[in-house]
Image (cartoon, rainbow, N blue to C red; front, side, top):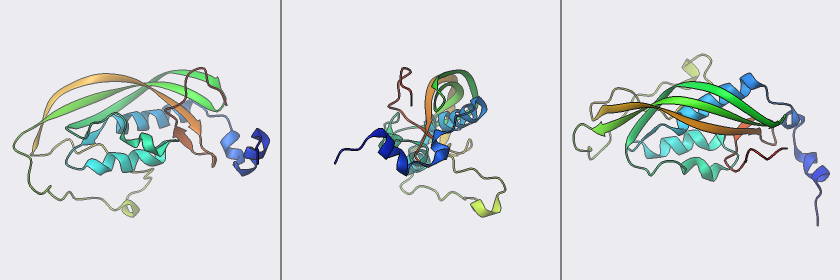
Length: 172
């Protein structure tokens, strides 16, 4: 059976067709860029768990990291915005990225890290994969500013997602 674009829209939420505001796009892009540029080999699955729900293609949650090393991004600065349509926005974000070097050999068993219970925190939007800035097994090596362009759209339910397959010439 062949489906047309109008038949595909039957399953979409009306919210998915709403324009994305510049402020909404900039905020979401800053959040994504910070987590995309953060990782910790002592907790290798954390990054994928955090990025997966933010992506239109969940398989992209492993892109951009080999699985080795430790890096923490912070201070996202959304800048230029390019909008090929109301529901596709490209946001240029600059984040400060600190790389780390091992202070001592990797432990056989990773140390248990205390975690806050989300229900105890007010205003929690979601988890982050940025590792703690202080860890006795790692030493901060260098900080740099890194630029990336984040392609944002809405999923079928209307939630913002990063779609790494979008190109600046795409529109909805």
